[in-house]
Length: 287
Image (cartoon, rainbow, N blue to C red; front, top):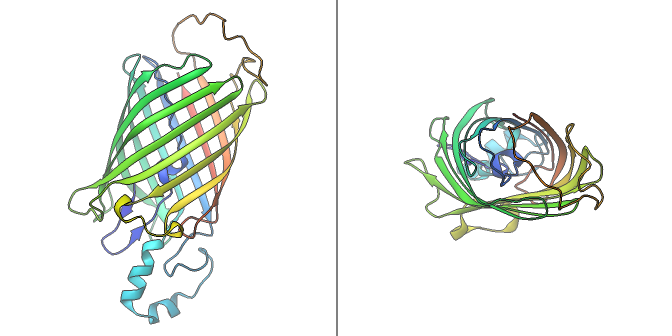
């Protein structure tokens, strides 16, 4: 996700547009509206000790301005909400735009970035097998003193019966006069989803971020989290449930049908820079 770099405070965000897993498929003429939100507990705060509800700010301030400013680099988010609209221009090319809003622990809830994104599908996944696409985005920071950011990388999918694996390994770079890093960063997300019923799936997701690969620092200063996710697709079919399904069944192309998908999950922080726990909720409507 777009990293928010303040003139005095650096806010460390969860990676990949607040727990987003990008998918490789592109369908011509399809419009998709997405919502992604998350609420965090045990958020890293200025001082680096305890969550959002603990600690002694007066003692931290008394420790000295320089020390406090350095510690404030570990501040995280209390909540975030993304709204995305995407459109498939061809069978392989998709463009989207996203409004990213959030509330850092030491700032007000506000619009933090506007992102434009393009995707090209290299290998179309048809049932079981491999899907591959390339994704690139540019995020315009909207808070004063913050850096724009570029992200790019592959989207890899591998399906086998009821199991779908998705990988998002992205490189990132800060752009403009407000950038705080000169080198590339690395962000990743992966998902393993098992479809156990026609409309339901369960899985595991993991996310992480290294802001500067040339100066990655200790593992605890990076943002890494993992947790379970439950998926619901009201228009889901019985194909590939529990290993069943017919890969030889002919797919007849036609106009895009309306499809609603929902998922909810928990993420547990693996490092001190990540929030202790986050509740994520996402919805997508395609037509």
